[in-house]
Length: 396
Image (cartoon, rainbow, N blue to C red; front, side, top):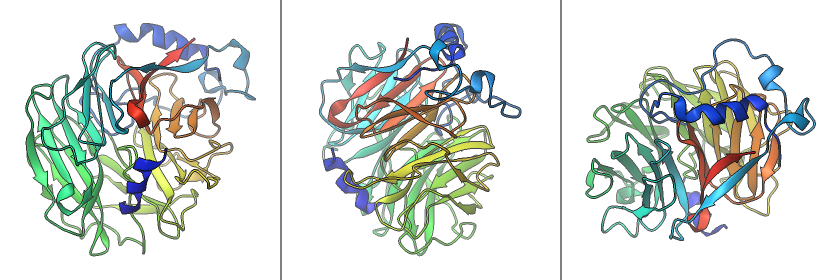
């Protein structure tokens, strides 16, 4: 969304004991290379959790919910990256390798779990904003820069950022690409704000080495003023081999689009997250399997309230209902935790929140500023944001 360019200038609770146990055993889990419910990765989806929700046991809540006194605490261990760029793109791969991207052409990579970081961005791109990065392996990554016309570009590296190939440059002056997501190492999509009244979808089948614009006849018409938000790389998310969801705002209501065939045809549903303003709507989505999803957003202006900043679905996005207890302010990023199966974390400029009830209730556990968040089985959970902030989630 074009109005999101102003974002560059903006500036504890307890968790179920099963989460603590799971965290202690994560190094022994076979690495999938997939991000949990955030739309990237190869291999099986982490933390999928089949079956009906229990609402008890590991789903017991936080704060005022049951069993809180027995739980360890959550917090962020901030890593020193050596940069001051705002990092809205994030993609952990393993316990050692994490990618992050952001303003001023910045692409960061660590190979030692965040102890040291290398700025490996494509040369000559200092004027670009890399709002999304998708790691396809320890040495392979794809980054998306946002903006009108030729500012929307995609670059790919196969050698940990030593060299890059520009694989897409937008030649449609009305297009503005916001985010991208991958189903596996080869198949992925990128999303643009509407052109000729419909959201534009870019597709790759070779790991981002080449791209094509998909036909728009399967895309429902956009509402007046409707667009996506390039705030966290999570306005587009995937689950499994073919399901993908797209989040919007800016119009008289916020909506979520869903495709079951990798972006060829779409359905669309309203959400209860308020819109009716270019600064309001759904900013990020996360899905745990094809049915259970969370949407977060609000109003990104710091002087504006964000009531009903979270919603959830149990039917793949056909219907959405508001969280019974939402985060207290605008949130731009969300991800499912690897364990327990109903836990997720949301982040924004004013804090981080956790849910143990698939998004029904949320409790704030940190007041630091982050823009995006992502988890994998072996890499744990990471967040990134303004002033080069990158952090790893700590339990206990």
